[in-house]
Image (cartoon, rainbow, N blue to C red; front, side):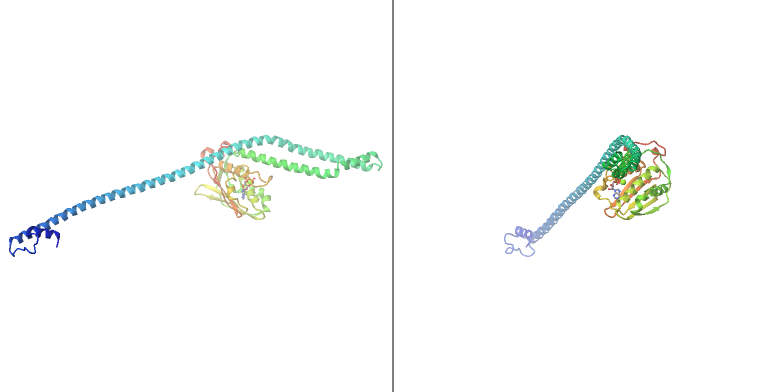
Amino acid sequence: MHPLLERQIRRHLGEHPETVLPPPGDAAWEHLFNAIGESYEQLDRDLLLREQALNLTSEELNRRNDDLRRELAERTETEAALQREKGEQAALITRLEDAKRQLLYSEKMASIGQLAAGVAHEINNPVGFVQSNINTLAGYVEDLFALTDLLEEVAAGLPDDSPLGRKIRESCERYDLEFLREDVPKLLSESRDGVSRVRKIVQDLRDFSHPDEGKFAWIDLNPGIVSTLNIVNNELKYKAEVITELGELPLIEANQNQLNQVFLNLLVNAAHAIKDKGVINVATRHLPESGEVCISIADTGAGIPPENLKRIFDPFFTTKPVGKGTGLGLSLSYGIVQKHHGRIEVDSQERAGTLFQVFLPIHQPAASAAGEEAAPAAEATAAGQQA
Ligand SMILES: Nc1ncnc2c1ncn2[C@@H]1O[C@H](COP(=O)(O)OP(=O)(O)O)[C@@H](O)[C@H]1O
Ligand SMILES: [Mg+2]
């Protein structure tokens, strides 16, 4: 029996309702039924109240839930913002490091440029007179040998017992005239080679420290490339098959001589990279979308190891033996291309080959238009390294 009902029965009928049940029709029954009805109504009211209370709690819960959700969304948003900021900071740090590297690089190039100019100037004079002295000396030596020839002839014409004839023959033997005749011209020619190598280095150094001499004009690059190819043909022909694909190019605002020097350096490097036999591909193309032209020189040579790739544009960086490389070719070319507001890109794979691409704008910015005065070397490299 429901406790509520039991309680009402007890209240109205006493402790033992089954024994004291009133007779039917007794008023006690009416009381009982009323009381039961009231109890149910009370129950309904209680239920309603509880329901309302529950509703209130659930509303509150929903509200809290919403608050939590909002808070979570805010936190996620803050975290995303933090991440974004972190990413931006990382990018900024990279940019700063790049800028610092470029600054250091251009400072290095500037001081090396000054040093190079100074050294070139100092060396140029002595090397000049050494070269001219060697030439004069070669003439004198020729005269002296003519004189010894004459002496030997004189000795040969004298009687065998002539003391003078004997003296001359003995002297010729003592000084090993035979050997001198062979060796002196060799020594002179080696010295000449050496001096002209030094001259070449001095010239490179001067070019390196003044890559901006000369004026800009509207030029067609293709003929320049053809004539440069002709010049280096000797260097290339035994090493490589040269394939040229010269596209139709617009005239560009540039300095022909300087650019030819760039092509020459790249071509000679390509030939040097090929050990026995390979292919050098020279191509030019017009890039109308970017307002540029591109000159690419690809070789099937040894390639550049990754650890060297960062250094190839550094002045004096060379992997070639003394006499073959000065390490100035690429830094010089780099300076020239920078001066043209262009860029050099390198793509290399060890043992497979190397691709150098020179991108040059058709128009120079107004400030450096044709005929403008040259800027110092350091400025030409300040825009940074592309490779
Ligand atoms: N096409 C190439 N293939 C392989 N290595 C190259 C190539 N071009 C340049 N290099 C590397 O870059 C170095 C620097 O080149 P460069 O400045 O022209 O000086 P150099 O030719 O006098 O050594 C070379 O010694 C070589 O190691
Ligand atoms: Mg070189």
